[in-house]
Image 1: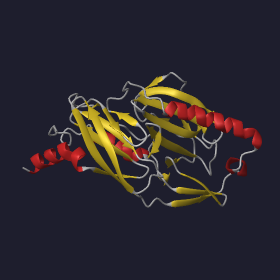
Image 2: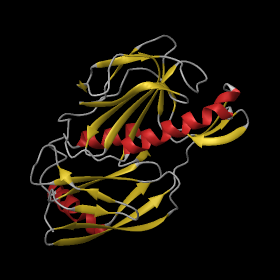
Image 3: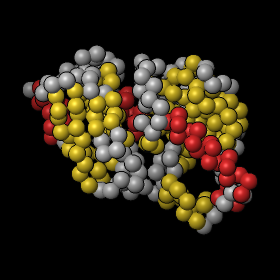
Image 4: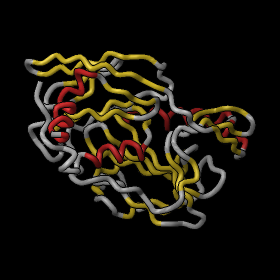
Length: 280
């Protein structure tokens, strides 16, 4: 009886509304793998559930700076036009004070063009929707190590508030192997001004994983990588206070808490959790 109630509630979830946190993503499970979920500024494709081809999923990333409010989403598919009330709430993210090379906070004029080009290059990648899913199994962390900085922390560099932390930092005092979080295609492997030696992997359907501050990368653009494959070593390149791995995930062009999204995606492989939902 309890399980039946849970199933019914899951089926009615889009009608009842969902809650999302700033800087994180909401994973919607829908009773059909069709259509789009329309948010304020974008249309998010509904894609096939990894265990049940009769159902769909949609990842809705929430901007870190989104106002606390209720937002109206709509799932549109053949014969369906379903409103979804999304309530956005704040998160008590921590603050961090860091000291780095002054040139990494206030870059010299000759570096500005390079920084702008690298930002444009990355944004073009992140906003490219590849209509292929390369992964078919749960995601894994890129390494086993203590986390020294969590996602979302407001960061003050050399006394000036500059940004928030768009990923998770793993401790790595000496060069350690980094593995791909899941199957995908390498779309960037190069040294960048802020991120240092960088690898970006396209996992398909709007998901990209990012690995920054490497001392070495062992893959090239176009390489197909598999979950757990070593793609490089940790390091201390770019804007850093010490050696570590910065691991991030972009979903439909927005930074999102990588460990939070991975945890949600991995529930899709839990057969008990993903019992068939009621249709609407």
